[in-house]
Each structure stands twice: as C-alpha cells, then as structure tokens.
Length: 476
Image (cartoon, rainbow, N blue to C red):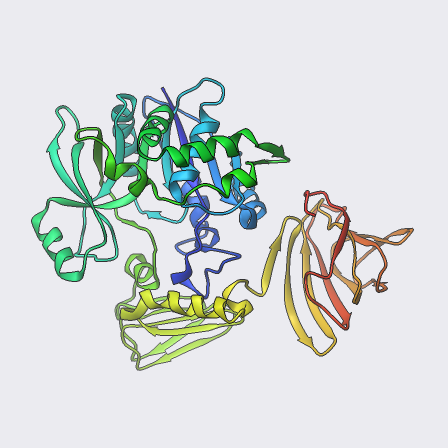
C-alpha cells in the first residue's frame, strides 16, 4: 500500500489582500511562522508512521506560480514526484484528476492524500494519526474525507453530517455534505454535535477516484485524459496539453463526486486538531497568539488602548490608538483598515482593483522570477529604479529592449555581464551601461546572492518591452 500526497496550490486567496495577491497568493506566504503555508503542508507528514509507504508529493499549480513553488520546495529540501502545471485553473476536481492520471501511469494505484496548500493544522501528530486511519478505509475502496470537530458556530465553512460509526475504527459513514450555512443554521449544527467541518482534505485510491468521476462527470474525465495525452516534460515541470485542458469544465471535488456517491461509499475521519483554511483576516486572528488585550500583532506595531485587533506591519511602523475589533494590514504599497466583522468583504477590494487594472491587486512591489526577484525602489517620468537579487548560479535571459536603456551597479556579489559581443565581470561598486536595443544578459557566477541596483531610462518602461533570444527557464 502506497500513500501519495497530492498538494493543490493554485488558489488566489483574495480575502487576504493586500498580503495575498494574484501573482503571489496566500499559500506562498509565511502567515503563521517562519515557513510558508505551502512549506508547512509539504512537511506535515514528517511524523507519519502508518502502514502505507509514503511517496514524495505530487503538486498541481499554474503557470504563474510554478517557479516560486519549485523554489519554496527547494528551500525545505523537498523534491516532488511531479510538479503538474495547469494552463488555467479549473477548480479542484480536474486538478485531482490530472494527478490521478499521473499516479496510475506506470500501473501503480496509490492512495492519494489530497491537501490544499493553504491550510493550517496545529497538531501534525493528530493529522498523521487521522491519515493512517483514513488510509485503511481508502485501501478498502472508500472515499474518505477528514472532518474537524467545530469549536464554534462558523458560517464560513462547509459541514459534513456524520452518520453511523464504522466498527473497529474511528470513522463514520458520511450522511451528507452541507454548504456554508447562515449564522442561525451554523449555530444549530454546532449545538447538535452531528456535524464536522469539511476540511477539504480527502483520501482515495487513484483508480477509485477515476471510476467515480467517470460515472459522475465523464466530461471532466474525458477532457483531462486528452490534456494528459498531450503532456510534455519541461525541466522540472509536467505541462499538460493546454487546448484540451481549457475545454475542461470547472468543478470542485465535493460537487463533482463526493456529494453524488452512493450511500456508504464515503466515510469521514475526525481530525483531532485545531484547523483553519485561513480564508480571511479574522480567521488568521483566530489562530494567532494574542496578548492580554486579545490583540494579534506582527512586525513593528505600537498600540495604545487597543483591543481584539489584528495588526500586521511589513515595512514601517504601524501605530494603533483606541481601536477595537479592527484589522490593520500594511505592505510597501497598500494598507488595509477594516472591522473584523467585515473580513469577508476584503475580496471586494481585490475585485475592484482588478476591474480598475491597478497593479496593487495583482502584484507586490517585489516580483519573483525563476532567477531571484526584483522590486521597485522609485519611478518617475522616463525613469525607474529597481533592486535586483539574483540567486547564486542563476542568470536572466539573453534579451533586448526597444524603448529603454539600463544602468547596472553592483551592491554585493559578482556579476557576469553580456552586452552585445562583450562579456565581462563586475565587482562591488562597479557598474555597466546597457544601451537601448543592445542584446544583453546578467548572471551570477558566484556562490552568494548578487544584488544589483538597476536604473532604467526611456520613453516606455513596461515589463512587456522585452525580446528574449535565449532563456534557461524556457520562457518565451
């Protein structure tokens, strides 16, 4: 019996704006400690001692997050079984189906442990125990959900109604799945003791998922098979056929299969741990350590007469006076201030920014690239200043710009510069000028990060003014 973790990491997390953005969503953020939510997820099974042999994880992500996802795995020394790239998000059921096709390609039939990349589980030992219990039922060809015992009447979560207990186990037959209730209904669920929160964590044999999907949603299965047939391996990424996958209907695991399975085919295993999907800022406050005034602070925060607030500072001092039940989240280019009771409405801000084509809804000032990152320092008419950090051994593409010239100054490290036919090294405090229209490349031949200050000048300074002649990372 083989256990194959499957981590779904394509969500946007717009209710956690301004920290979570389209280009850098919540699973890539360190919200509850030093590790990001993704890193905590891939390491969650470190203490697993069940009967099933544990495989390296499969991950499903999208084009936008592929390089930073791979880099975060590298940082915690995790090498995945495969990094599957979706051309475009189609919700969780197609993502699981692609992974099931990958997992069964060589005739194997592992138990898939499906985990969203952006959840918090406080007790890894309890999680591993629930997984070991779930694996027994999944091996018996049941579809397994992990449910969490509610500690409050929470209208923001889906629920699972528990049926009869299963002999010689800690599991129960699933009676029904229930959508997010209103506050009154959530209170009745909580009081009855008959319901668990639906964690969105599932277990099943890969073949069993494909069998149930073929019965419930053959259109999804057909589209995913066609996309998988058109797959190709590019460096560390398994890219499925884009044209076929874009024809795939979008649906969740719950709607596509779990809510349609025959009676008795699904079981729920209670997870004896505090758990959160960190779906909004009030949820983060709920799971964060708090002071004697019930405040959760992170970063440079000073507060007077402030109670029951969440305040996060990323780049400057945040001062709070006389606040109660408020959210204050500061980043380099945006500040959110809202009552905790309106945490779900933060998504409306993200949607409005997207509608108005404002960059604050899509990207941070720090933009991650496969070679490192850059961030904007200053900008004005016909000029822009950036700070670049190039990882050891990494290099940018061989490229050219039609509308701008660039001036590079080395702050730390060693740079190898290609400019036209010339190639040369720059040390600290040395600089190079790249004329408009000149093919050029920057690379770090050293063993420490290379820090560069780049001054751009020209009539147009957009990121789309780039022609790539050659790229190590397969970008066009």
